[in-house]
Amino acid sequence: MKIGSFLALIVLLSVLVVPASAAYGWDNRITLEEDGMTWDYTETYSGNRSVIFKKYVDMEFGNDDGFVSAWELLKADVSMSKAFRKSIEDNMDVRIDNSSENVVLLGVETDMSSELLGIADEESDIVSKYEVSYDFKIPLDESGSVLWFQGEPKTDITINLPEGMEIASIDGIESESVEEASGGTIIEGKLGLTGEAVIEYSIPEGEPAVEEVNATANATANTTKESSDPAKKTRIEDFLDKLFSGDTDEILKKMKLDGTSLS
Image 1 (cartoon, rainbow, N blue to C red):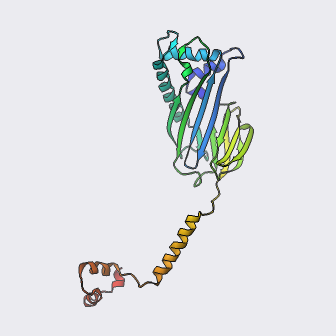
Image 2 (cartoon, rainbow, N blue to C red; image 1 turned 30 degrees about the vertical axis):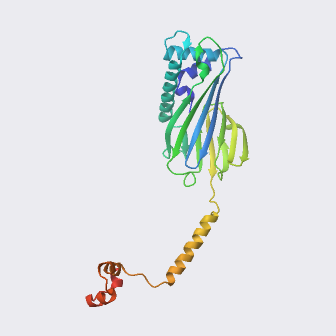
């Protein structure tokens, strides 16, 4: 998702001509599970851009007195969270097999840097974080073979894949590196000019766990044992047993009923 779509300030800061010492950064970290995912963003400002950001918060959410208070920061936090969510709802940034029907946006959490507080004209290192949570209606191991993400072009990205997911191909990530870790595969790199990243994957069926094998063996043994037992009573025989205390076989004979046919 392009960040300029949810906050005009980001666009302003990205095009302003400021000294080289004025830094801006935007990092993406995606953590995938079979039934959902989180997309964490880390936004950093320093130098002149931090001053611009603080002045924006003071003007847009405060009284433009040159000082960012805790109340003004809270208002900015809430507003950005709503705008962030709305931008994702309008343009979903996650697809499975070229569709977002299986993807549900659960929520957006923001954590605006405390360095925004104080005198607006003072430079500082601002690090704000955003976390977006998604749910998959159908787990990845039951459907899908291609994941698509829309991020901000030319920003760093890290994708943590769940254990057991095998990669067939990766497109849209420059200078990519792939590392196998104990919890799954980690992909790192930088998004290209379009900001799109595409991962073709598969999740092979695993070997059944020891507990499952034992359970299956026990079920088979129980079935064999039950098959050697006398046949169970039919539905009407069982009903008559509960209704009368006498011999149900004799009652059935007198009623001329074939119990088996009524089962």
